[in-house]
Image (cartoon, helix red, strand yellow):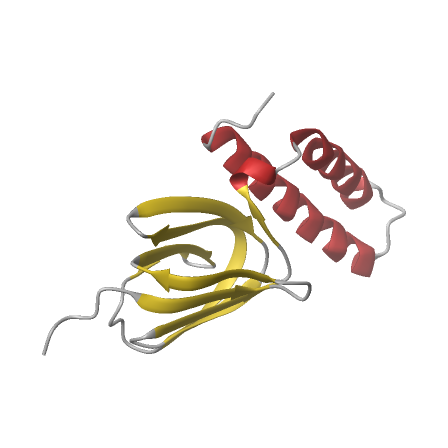
Length: 141
């Protein structure tokens, strides 16, 4: 029996099928750090945090930033469900910087209710992830 070389991969957001196709490898950002997935991987569920999503398809790496979500892995299939995903080349750095400033202001404002502070913390994490990916892959102005 020959080894599996690709796996069907789907990256889904509430708004679109972000990526669908065969992938040779995925690298995701999880609560425990980066996780690499190859075809034939044992079944696994992964809690995802904002960060890099790298997909190797047709011998080429594509890089995106993804938000909170989860991934379900089987030997032949990888399903990634996240709130949002954006290719590194599409990140609007100015918008991400403004979002970070707004979220930090809300988070540190003593008048912000605790529930809104949680949302602000998530906003900080999302904006920081977008800026990190933009800086790492040459999109910073």
